[in-house]
Amino acid sequence: MPIYEVDASWPKVPLPNNWLIQAIPVMVTDHDDHIWVLSRSRDLKPDESMAAVTPPRGDCCAAAPEILQFDTDGNLLSAWGGPDHHPLWPSNPHTVVVDREHNVWVSGRGRGDGILKFTREGDFIWDFGHRGPRPVPGEDLPPLVEDNQDTDTIPNGVFIFTLDEDAREIYLVSWKRVLVYDMDNGDFKRGWGGRGMPLNEITNDPIPPYDWRSGPPPLVDQFVPALHCVHIAVDGLVYVCERGTNRIQVFTKQGEFLSEFQVAPSTPSRGSECGGPGHATYGMCGSTYNLTFSHDEGQQYVLTADGTNHRIWINDRFTGEEVGQIGSLGRNAGQFYWIDAIAMDSYGNLYTGEVHYGKRIQKFVLQNGDGVQRFRPHD
Image (cartoon, rainbow, N blue to C red; front, side):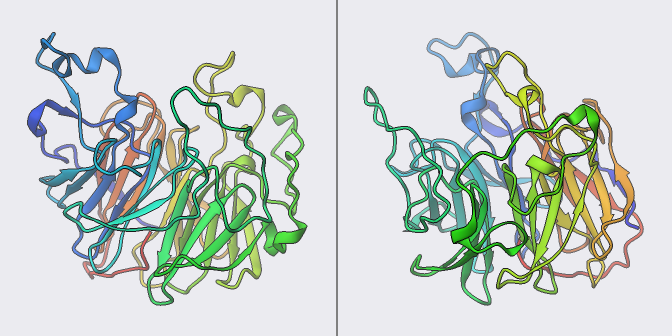
């Protein structure tokens, strides 16, 4: 089982221009072992932005650009992106992916958000499309209606996605389904629901609630939103994080259901306690926020970021058995406060990011690796 030790000197600080990192929903590594971080600038609070007003009220701070590139030593290599970077820049950015040609793909989960492709310097290349209408100030959009059979339009934004570069395909999750598109022209290719369900059998109704006090969420055939990750392992199997039921489902690339397992299954995964900011109750729910695979050649383990329990769970990828964990609730090095992002470099070192008030990135150094550099399909 992999063993990690936090590197409290990573990343190098301070950042230039009084920049302050904000909530980190996703971070990835590229084939040069550079770490790409998506920092959600809209999460900047008034007491964090005293340097951004005129006249400045203090020395600190201003929101960092929304795309940050670091090396393994923690040096900031580049920074760009944000609401003024491109007219279609996501209103609620959530995912960044970097392909083997160093192109940077960015998506968001706001209404009308899609996927944009840039050079690593931030120059616009391509819009994936399939976006619904974007909000216009002073105008009301019609209510969002779930439609799991519509593959032309993704009106609720592209929450999370990954690339299969060998097959030239984009995998994304939306509502209660996985959808696969051509990564060069955006054409729809195939899709499926929970346990491999055909698209025409997926319900558009809400999944019934459950009483978390009586036990883990029931395992049902339908996907239970929120779907929170999609990743492809080295053997080509597709893993989907199903935060609404603490579950990870495993498929072939054609959507054949193979297996499933729950992570920290007794964690409340949905209900009135999961309202989020502004609701009468405010608590994070579900245990499967995101995942990465271990560094060994066969990727024996799944490492799952759990923002509700503030830790990383280690499960055997083939049996689902829980074999270990990393971290605990706290603000010190090596602890987590609402971990959401997780990524692995080619030597097996682990990188994490936190949302809400966590707003930081950390590096964990693999202590018992074999020293062999390996590359995996992109997270």
